[in-house]
Image 1 (spheres, rainbow, N blue to C red):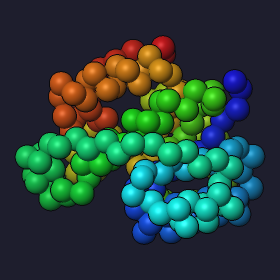
Image 2 (image 1 turned 180 degrees about the horizontal axis):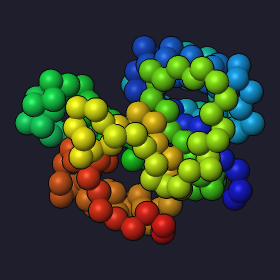
Image 3 (image 1 turned 120 degrees about the vertical axis):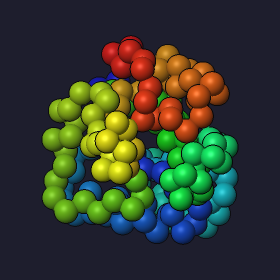
Image 4 (image 1 turned 90 degrees about the vertical axis):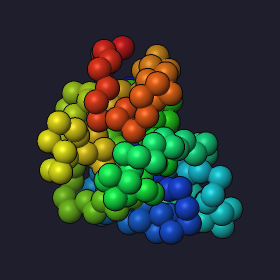
Length: 170
């Protein structure tokens, strides 16, 4: 287990188009890393087949919804509840390190250097300075961390990805 991979998520057929752009922009700029897409059951078989021609690996995952309607309403982004599905990144233990890229990310140069960053590296969210933006982040897959994230998510809702106080080195 020494390989690294870029990971993105497609929860619907329309997100598959964005995910394809992510993969193609990574390849266009010469990445030497694997490119993986996680898809949910809402993605059609036709779209999954199309993704298989672009990605090194297409992995089916279950949808996770924060169901935190109050905080999502405050953000004005009710559709963000399913971003909890990103927690599945920590189950990709066939990789030693992953860089998650949202499906609306456009890569403009080679970004393989992101794999040199520590877990959990991410940019601060400009609208919420005490939180990070989960659109691009570096992680080390770990079932132990995944379990901790799941437990924390069940107890605390939306704040999970931005405010988690867990030991990231496990």
